[in-house]
Image (cartoon, rainbow, N blue to C red):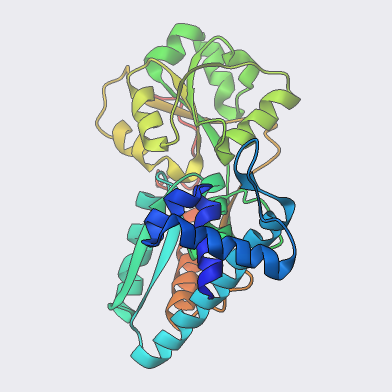
Length: 327
């Protein structure tokens, strides 16, 4: 890529000529000259200088185009590198903090057997952040939930998931009668839980989006006390009896492990939500313009196979009986 384009990308990222110059180890005058030459060449203004420094519409178009060029160049380098070096290479994968400990231990041992010399860096963020990182070329692919179908994305659905209500026995029995609890076996109506304190993901999270759609449609207002994206932490907060949570079923292994040795009061009950309508979609996402080398294509195939198995996995060993009303 031309040096002028690299300077433009850095200035666009920093929105400061001086900061970009320092990052590139060139003078501020040199950075400004590169921007002026580009503006003269394409006969457009790329940045507004006043009242604040920001991209113009033409600058936004150039930024988007150059980010795509970066992705194509990076893809080319990886493919040429894999030809030159056989099975050596590197790539980056985005994944949520909650799904990483569930998915990666199932995938990496298989992958390491065939590609022991491939280096993988992991970016653990919510889906919305990972979408931005893939669009800007900071990661090569990601595993997300209910991914936004941007035209630049190649999306493969790995599995579907559903939300389950998780609540400790003490909190459940403080708020509901034994008969009401027995009726929850077939699923719960969240209207019944409007007075119960909850912990949920941040509002920017895709899981929270699915929950909020349900709440808005059914006119339900939950008493949300804590916001945290990590499902394992949410579950552990539930064990203390201070709140309930809505967690994807795929991430409930922590709850089942807890129930094997916990006391009666902290036993975690798990109920499906009635009339939820929309399932969570677990996606593997890459950039359409990227031609993936063999070591990335193989990784994607293993991911698809293992997450499909995970979606069918029953951590209770009860043949799919996820509702627990004992304890």
